[in-house]
Length: 126
Image (cartoon, rainbow, N blue to C red; front, side, top):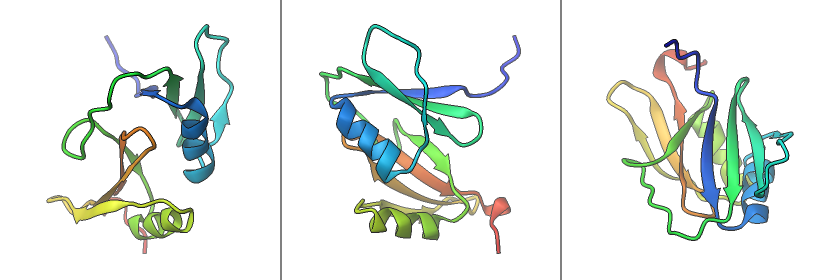
């Protein structure tokens, strides 16, 4: 078996409209066409090839934490990303440096899913 790449991350949400606004308008992820499933949801592009699939209808609590269940988005600059998220009315938290030098911070979505933003040290620009 040959694994080629990570195709998508799927999260279950309570309010599709609120989550679509958060990921599409607040985070600025481009929306994608979604096949005609029998259940509501929305798809967004993550970088060049990966996707985020949000699926409506969650009834249970989200269990997520920066040291547990989360997904990470690589950014060119955590400082610029933090500032832009604040400008958009969001509240990033927990800025830190990993032992390998990567910079990280976190943001919670409307359901409590944890999103990490990371700047990889060896890819730092400037």
